[in-house]
Length: 149
Image (cartoon, rainbow, N blue to C red):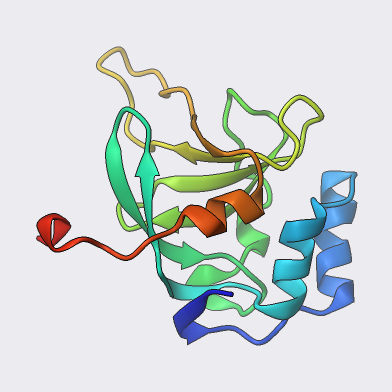
């Protein structure tokens, strides 16, 4: 279980069903359970994750149903052009999205989507971080002293 500097109260079944209705499918069971028990928050601890080919990043905001900056509802239409059926579930400290795959070809996988464009003005392909929300959470770690700014 994650701890948060600013936790949200658990989501309701009705709130979770509202995402599933908009997505047209059930959420992965591990992410669904997370919303019903923890529902996101600000700065999870531990919150450092590795981004293959990029280094590491810090999970800054975990989207849920608490209103304000960390509310998932305004983000339900944000989609990666590479993953047309995904759900933003948070962002890192630099504003890059963490995405949950909902399409059958990548259902349940967690991706990191760089918001910076290439020199040609194209969106970079998303980077797979884990095969499931549970695997992603289990891989989170504390920042090493050598990584402190």
